[in-house]
Length: 104
Image (cartoon, rainbow, N blue to C red; front, top):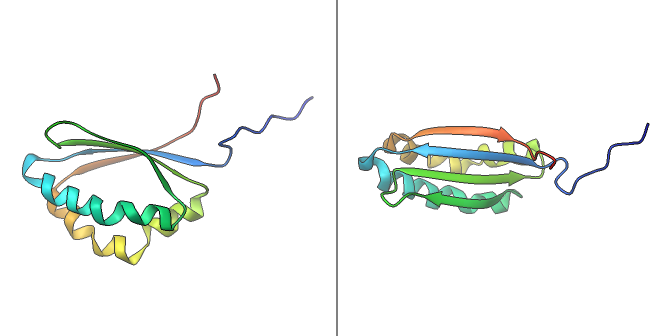
């Protein structure tokens, strides 16, 4: 039996985050994102794509991390935790999906 071939993204964690924000919360949500997204790179994470509809009430991110440990470091960063009040004030409903590449 042959060994499985390693793919380029083997071991990489990929998350898709979908946020649904009430119109009155868009400003607070965007302020939160402005504070926390720059922290990703400091922890080895990478924002692959950031998508938003015209009104700002729907936003999607594709984020990758080299490992779960890196993702945990980002999530527990004190600056990110300190900005949580903005996310809460936005009343955004955020769904975070852990996904992986599907071989074609």
